[in-house]
Amino acid sequence: MSHKVLVTGGAGYIGSHTVVELLKANFEVIVVDNLCNSSRVALTRVEGIAGGLVRFYECDIRNSNQLLKVFRENKIESVIHFAGLKAVGESVTDPISYYENNVAGTVQLLKVMRQCDVRTLVFSSSATVYGDPASVPVCEGFPRSATNPYGRSKLIVEDILEDLCNSEAGWRVARLRYFNPVGAHASGEIGEDPRGIPNNLLPYIAQVAIGRREYLSVFGGDYPTIDGTGVRDFIHVVDLAKGHLAALNYLGVNEGLLTANLGTGSGVSVLQMVAAFERACGKSISYKVVDRRPGDVAQCWADPSYAKTVLAWEAQCSLDEMCADAWRWQSKNPNGFVI
Image 1 (cartoon, rainbow, N blue to C red):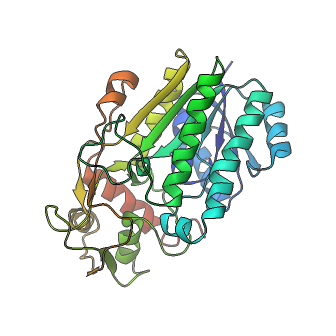
Image 2 (cartoon, rainbow, N blue to C red):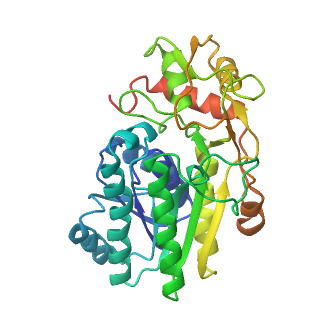
């Protein structure tokens, strides 16, 4: 019998790529998603890529009655939890929504899990919990802080999960701290499809390349970095998805709390990313250097050695592959999932 995994937010960017990997590994996948920042089309395409079926519920994790129904109808055995809001700027202007979705939503999920005696959870955390790190690369033991409500919502959920594992035996929880997910599935069928103006660098560059935007705004050209622009650890979304599979397999044989960085271990500047994307698409990308954004840090990349040791996982894809896959997705789907 195949293992039944519930994926919250499974129609979203990282969720949909993870569902592909789960189906390929013969997991039975149930997805709940309220579609506030995702598309039902993504899951149809996931089924085509992986040659498997997904059981989908349009459901909000804050609705515990709906969630309970999903758990009971499917005899869920473990959960991968992506559902949540993720735009840093929006979190500053509307913090209540972030605490309601990301924190209260997770609490509802945990209550339903406990009610149904499901105690295995892989949680989608973020490198934002490190705030502005004193040094790089960033290790799991670094002090945590938050520079915005989005990061704080992740930090609060991390603490809730730690308290839960300390208070009750039997929980198996992984907190995966992602760095900067980019790229798309090699098929070009699924990828990042942000609503409105992209908050992340690569989809913005891709939209400039496809002609949807006039130029890229580069926030800050005077950082103490290789070329004055911010430096980040960009990780291919398929590598990231495989990290969730590795964490789920680890929790199958290990009880308690695991915390691991998922990154490549190397930093790439904004202008280096622009140059890599120009190589991928064969066009020049217009950009303008503008003022720094409040809350942005100069540089941040991971020390991913713990994940390699404990999960036997490491990122495989190069920067050029990330850009080539992102461009394939964008050029095949100039308007995202909107047909």
